[in-house]
Length: 436
Image (cartoon, rainbow, N blue to C red):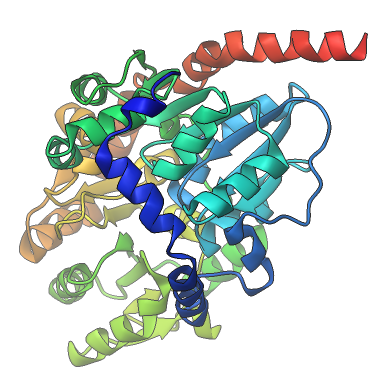
């Protein structure tokens, strides 16, 4: 790339500081392990070591930070794996490793991404020698990018997302972000707005492919667990709240309290974004005079249960199949919103708060079409939920409109594969020559 000599001082300093920080990194890993944020048996992977041998032939490496990114690229992984490439997937969280175990096709390798220290990164690259690296959304680690680029590995950003907020932050360090983005061969952006922002920061070749999350299948649900929950709930009216953040549960519980008198037997299914917060939410419910049960303790909703807290991992598929009305969290607080697509694909009518910049294009499309509604506080949340509980027809119209509105935004998977095709064709040719 001939750019090493023009590396900005910030990146030089970053490389030197991270290179010298190994003793601190060991402390960090130990601290994270204690908090359940590292996988005890697989700590070596965080240092770039692997117990898995690299298979022969071309290797495609995809990296996504966490569960959301991994879910988005599952269909893409299936397509690439179907073309007989070795596929290596890396991510950084324990929950994403659990998802990888459940849902990656057999033969696809999952590893924890090494911590962004030059020695660890080089060890990882020495072992895996990827032929192509695909980074999902916006998880850009400077040492990983610089080292891959220096080895001549083509880098492609897929499902690229850059919020207005991140864009403004990066504009204070234009040379730093520019030096990283120019190392990418190709930048596949989710929307025209994302593409414009990437261009503004110096990304060279940008194509708008759409959002891969729209093409991801609805989350599965265990049939036995679904039937057991349905039996426990019976014919009670249900409202749901998914991926909620601190501050939002109180609003949802307040809405429940307001609606309880009008809708006898009302049950709220609530899945916090971070399951470990379940017991704390049960305390809030208790203070508000509501009876709560926790799924993590193996409890089931009973006749007098007001709130059933689904403080478990990978079970949103159950909530979306059971609750006809779902409030999407991260949107009443200043988080940027959570992904509404899965709820919509499973037939829920969606409510959300005003802070949805993480999925601005999707929510705007939904709201304009009448496929979702925005609420600003607990009072409005209760009013909309009450209206939809009363009027099943209106609720059904909203959920059907949402499906049609999202259909128009789909197709990102095909466009992404088409953009990758020239690279894949080259590897196929290379493999034929090696086999000949």
